[in-house]
Length: 401
Image (tube, rainbow, N blue to C red; front, top):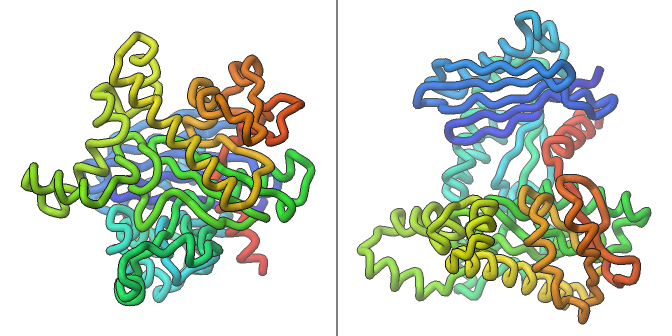
């Protein structure tokens, strides 16, 4: 079997999936979390329904990887006899900047470069580097590792889309520019849509809406990203669970002064206390906000209106940027499951040729389906994302040359 282990490491977590690439099925998946502050592992084997949960001691990512190896290779519910059976390991990396525009094999130099980019993604890149070092200690030396970058898909954006209006020297000296994120998801769903439509992706203009606790919208023209809503960091764009999205920079400095915040405190304020949570006062979860709105909570109604309005504006602006649009994708936790968001976003979009089948839309949650009417000039689709599968495909393709 061609077995690929996909790893997504955070500062205190290590999510994983083991896939059989002969049929692209998930053999096992789980999460080692609370790294550095105790430790816990949750592990599942989909084929048998086996679930394993245990509190552990994970001082570092190395111990988490050792536990990962243990649950995969030992006990009556083991799925492999040893890690030698794994063909390769694929790692999700958030920030590759302009250094990495495609997946590549892991070397000591590559890990160092990823760690050196931590200033651009402090929450993500250093933990990624720690996980890569830890994995190298635990895996057989002959097992290849591959890194796949969220930002790589967006490296096709032209300068007019990725440069800010700051002095050009800030780009040259400090690499300040729009990078975009969720690139692996946008690449997966746009490719899956082209297949579902029976068309060559090179002939399609797509607006891909990845909507979840973190959200981004991308203009995909001919299979390439030409613009995206997230910017220098994943804070930019539309409002999210706890992130404020795009804000007038003067509002940022003004609020900093009023609260007496340091730059770090202001970053925490915009990243962790804003968005759905800060606006609604209810929750960072869109489901809770929608329920509160249904119950008549005015701030929840306002928050839902803002989210839907902002998504609608991006669809319009990216349609203009691409000189047309053939399809709109809804993906991510909200995009795949929120009937209310999809209906509200597509409301009054007939000028663009968007006509939603409202009754069909109400029945679609988490499955691939066209939800526009036969008369709609622009097709609207729900396309479930699968970043782990695309990382596994990229990994296998790279090691097979």
